Image 1 (cartoon, rainbow, N blue to C red):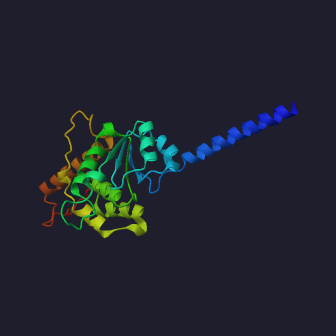
Image 2: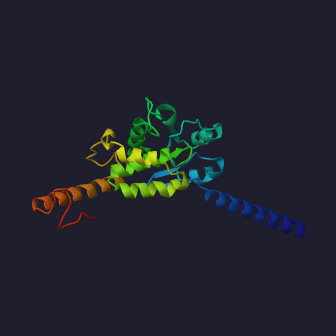
Image 3: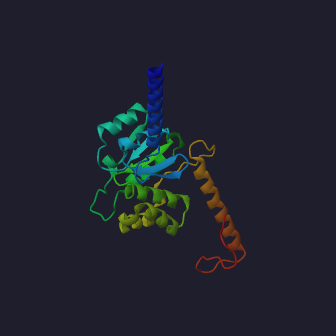
Length: 231
């Protein structure tokens, strides 16, 4: 009886330890992981240690921005979990001509158009470092959302840290958001809900600006003299 009790206790403890180990594993996100918006995440290239964590995100799409091909272990993990792997970096990473740009406009354009497709969510944007190409794409998304340049740069630097590159910030500043094809989506079935919220904020700002302009509260430099734009 004592032997059976000891065996049972040992088995229970082993199962408990295994459960705790599995729980700890779920708390191991990829490096440079962050939440961009609801259903949109960012990180560096996934590693097997982070698989349990990623599995809990119930990803539908992974946007791979790096030029490196993922390992077979990584691709197998995505296949086993029915995650669509979109390897943009292997196709349109670099500009076609000699350029200072860290990546091509086509890469950012295609990445953003995928991010804006709600059917692709939950979605993970990842790259070799998780801060350069990923930071550029997220920065251009923020620009599309109407963020100020200072806020965009602050977010970029918070992830990049000592890896910050001026060319990344310059690319974001100069990126033409009109290149991105954003559908009208009158039924609100294509674009994510958080993007509609930013569109609403932007329209409210435009209306305030037009009203202030009609009241003569706009200076020659286009600055509000007696009113401020706020949400």
